[in-house]
Image (cartoon, rainbow, N blue to C red):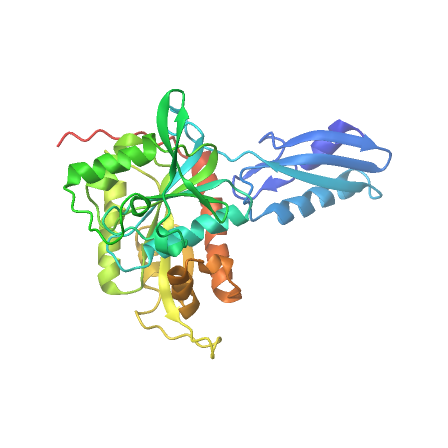
Length: 363
């Protein structure tokens, strides 16, 4: 066996999401051959890659079929999260910035954002979660950090806020800076200033994904964030209910405007059905059936999955231990499947679309 023979064989293995072979994508390195033994490393586009096993088996089969039936093949994996960021003056260590948005409140956006971030981290990625909902922060309760305060550190002569570290996530929220008994009574410019501070004065460090839990609607904070940093893409959360779908359309329209043009990673349908714990096979469509799925088809958006309405999801958020960290296998798998689709769509977006620019707001 020779290195060229191995590369030729692996040129028949496609990266399923990117549509090209591993050799063309420069995803193969460190080929070592010792008699019938061969090993090499495949560089994945994210440590949270859900197709790792599929790619590994395809590599082994390619070498055995095209080079040597007796070959003992060892496939190692590493990752280099792909990114479209080239302007790194703000958040220089963050590769992908994902905004989780909804047209209205009450659709479970914060729950989706929290468990999406945890699913990314469970796959081995470095992840941060920014709670950008200034008037209704949820992170302190959902992660059991109520009353805790972030520390400060000196970075190159500048005071920086150190995000809390919880469940392998870096967390930041206005709820960590103000007493939860006090209402945040701020006009738009003050709220926007706080968001800029969360981006420019928090030491986020090196991250594969920064998940931002956005406030509901299409207002000042959304515009401020898009003015401050280029967003990789947005995940739209809705329920199947007509009222929620009508508002989700507004969120979709905002990101599709020419002066914004932030790619939409896809749409997820939360509270898709109710399943009682004692009847795990039953589905009750309390808010309607597949409204989010139909909306995704209507706007030609990727459909990211359906999350059931299950008591343990609510309990986990209230108890400070999100359901991704629980023993509820059904809910956990729903979020894992959803996160896998998101990861794949981010990779496809980064491979096929131009980088997102910060926007200019003139009115």
